[in-house]
Image 1 (cartoon, rainbow, N blue to C red):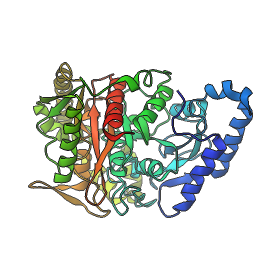
Image 2 (cartoon, rainbow, N blue to C red):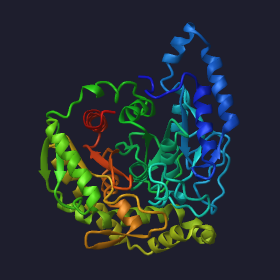
Image 3 (spheres, rainbow, N blue to C red):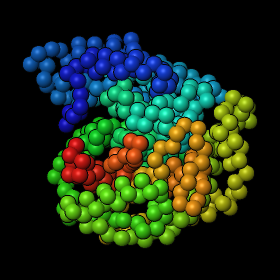
Image 4 (spheres, one colour):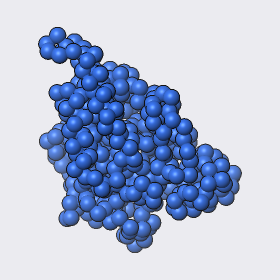
Length: 443
């Protein structure tokens, strides 16, 4: 299936993206823009395929023809020295593309640039002291979310047709929700991470950020190397008869505007014929602690030498969190893994009775840049932890999860809905999300 929102040619896609980039010179979205390389890639593609009716067969073999993709700047791009969003590490110039980038090129996409991110992908706000904080295209002056901040912003601004990010605790879904776009985290291990600089070996996922769910499905066909696997039948999935699990604990802690948007969406789904099923997930209450113990230890395992040798070059927030994580005791890590197993089992049991879970992607709307705490009911929480709260349980369990925009608050800041499915049920999640998008929002 060809990409739904593409240009007539790679060159047109590149020039469209570059014009949008030039229109926002102070947006801090990219760490590097490959203008001339992208133009050359586009011309080479057009030369390979040829022109006119005779070229149709060649184009049919390139589902991403006429698209320009941005890549989160912690993946190898041949000939480019990644930054990882940091000044504490000097990476070598990449001799070859990451596997995921190779697949994009083979499908006809042109790489437009490397996008900004929260330093080392170790944060949820998108604030970066080295490369600046990317602007939020949907809510100017508000946080873009992280860590794939530049990826989400590039799609929202139209600086790229789509983007590829990573998600260790919510780093695709959080910025997608903040910037009013779609972000999909596949099942753990479904997409290759070779050539992607890690943060947490048991938590890292690669995935797409797009304008629509259908676009995410097309990209999954390409990225997973399974043509038709995620697009075939996606338009036949209907809300009528869909069993939507509605947790009545944990996710209920949310700002009033988020709660209203969530309940309004569920009510609309029920009217459209979906079956809303209340579910209980008591182990979720311990998920944040289990996640922080897991991600903290894994991050230190990767970045310990950077912390010791070049800690003074790290941003303050990343340096403090890495330093604190050095002192996580081994028994806490072990207990966290035990809880992961139990939580996975509890969720697996729930999916015997429902097709997907529906929860708010974030318990808050994106706060203004510089706001370090938020109010959640009677709880005053750190912004970075509030952003992580609803997404990280599904990194712990490796389940497929998607965020799609469903509303905005009184000021227009977006609100996202997160749909989650059983492990390996990626097509199921995409189909349900497409039904929500199509039937409730007429996209």
